[in-house]
Image (cartoon, rainbow, N blue to C red):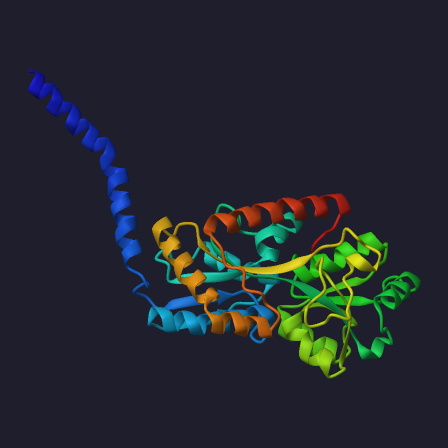
Amino acid sequence: MLHELLSSRVLRLAKVLSIPLLALCAQTAQAQDFPPKKAVTLLVGFAAGGAADTAARIIARKLSENIGQPVTVENRPGAGGNIAHQMAATGPTDGSLILLGSVGPLAIAPHLMKVPYDPIKDLAPITMAVNFPNVLVVHTGTGIKTFAEFIAYAKKNPGKLDFASTGPGSASHLAGELLNDMAKIDTVHVPYKGGAPALVDILGGRVASWYATMSTAQPHIESGKLIALASTGTERIRALPQVPTIAESGYPDFNATNWYAFVASSKVPGPLLDRWNAELVKVMKSPDVVEGLAKHGFPATPGSREELARTIARESAMWARVIRERKITGE
C-alpha cells in the first residue's frame, strides 16, 4: 500500500515537472547551437553611412572572425529606428538576429508616440556597446560661429532656425527639444531616416543645425564645412577640446548623451542571450575594435545584461519625466 502511494506521488510530481523540464532542456539545447545554424543578421535602424552603421560594421567584422561565420549588417531605417526595433521584437527566436539598438527607440520614443512594441517586455538586453555625447554643428552659411551666437539668433528669430535629427524620439531630437525648453528658444525639428541623409542636407545648407555624432561630423568640422558649437554631454569631447559643453555654456543641467546597445527578441532563450553577451563583450574588448570605435568617437562600453537592463530602465524613467514636465511632443 505504501509502495503504491509513493509511486502515485512520484508519477504526479513527474507530470508537474515535465513541462518546465522539457522547456529547460529545449532552451539548453538551443543555447548549444552557437553560433546559430542560420546566417547571423546584425540589424541597424538607421541608414548606411551613419554613426550606428559605422559602429555596427566595425563590430560585425570582428564578430564574424571570432564565431567563424558571416555576420550580415542589415539597415532598416525609418521612424527614428523604431522600424528595426519592431523587427527585432518580433524576429527569430533562435538568436540568428540581433539588433544594435539605440537610446531613442529603447528609452525615449515610447514616451513620445505610440510604438508597436514594448522595449522592456519585447526586447531582451544583451550588452551596452558605446555611449557618447553628440555635438551641435551648424552650416557655415548661417553666419553663426559660437554657441552664444546660436542662442542669440534663435531668441531674436523664433522659428527661423531648424535642426536635423535621425528621427522622432532620437537622441538628436531630444537634445534639440531639451535646449529649446531650457533656453526658451524655438528651433524647428526636421527628422531624417538616419545620419547619412541628415548630413547631406546640412552640408547642402538645406537645414541649419544638427546634434550630430562626432564620427559623422568630424571630417566636415575639420574641413571647415561645418562649425562645432557645443557638445551635449557633461564633459568636452576629447577630439574637440576647444568646444565647450552646453552644460558649461549657461545650462548646467543639460545632459543628453547618445548610446547604442545590443538587444534581441525577448523570446530568445536566456542561455543563448548569455552566449551572445559573452561573444559581444569579447569582441568589444579586443584592441582592434576598441581602437576602431575610438577613431570615430565611440568609447566601447560593454557590460553585463543586467547592467544594460538597469541603464534602459533608468534612461527611460529620466526621459519620461523630461518629456512630461517639458511637454515635448513627437511628430
